[in-house]
Amino acid sequence: FDNLYGCRESLADGIKRGTDIMVAGKIVMICGYGDVGKGCAQSMRGLGARVVISEIDPICALQAAMEGYEVNTVENMVEIADIFITATGNCDVIRVDHILKMKNNAILCNIGHFDNEIQVNKLYEMEGVEKVNIKPQVDLIKLPNDKAIILLSEGRLVNLGNATGHPSFVMSCSFSNQVLAQIELWQNEHEINVYTLPKKLDEEVARVHLPKLGAQLTQLSKKQAEYINVPIEGPYKQDYYRY
Image 1 (tube, rainbow, N blue to C red):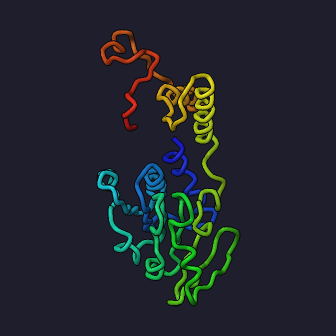
Image 2 (cartoon, rainbow, N blue to C red; image 1 turned 30 degrees about the vertical axis):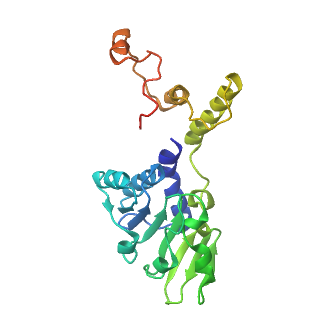
């Protein structure tokens, strides 16, 4: 729940607080279409932007295309897009040579992981670059080509630097997972290793949050449970199932 549904709300919050721009009608380039990128794309589309996705993974790229997004490269969009958002978990996604080709006052931010998704340090080291602070976590970077870009949160996580992160309800789901994981580790013996949270615990977290959204869960009959070979009380999916 955290990445997709959290970023879907906190990305727009960060961009709006930082810039006060109108997103509708803008061309937004989102680098990466994992859970974070998917949430970001939904958010920007919901605000009326034309969303373009860049991806290295053909499966994620096809998912984006079949959701109706344009799939293209940063190189092809760098002179066209108004807003660039990195959401990859990788480094050097937006390079200095990309930045020099961007529109004047293009907005650049990261919601992926560390500040190396954008080559911020190399940008600051370039001769002729001037950093002008507009307000906290919002910098106008004047470039040697007489253009400028607006950099949010110095390339760090925009939803934390320019806003206050995910909504509390989403974080409740995440922290509930952590609490149940600690109880599981305390009550049951496990060898030292890295484990995926058991699906039954994931289901329990979802189950206890449903009433807060006014949701009513359907319950299997004994016959239905036997028909699909699952317990009435769950878990309902195999560990390899992708939601």
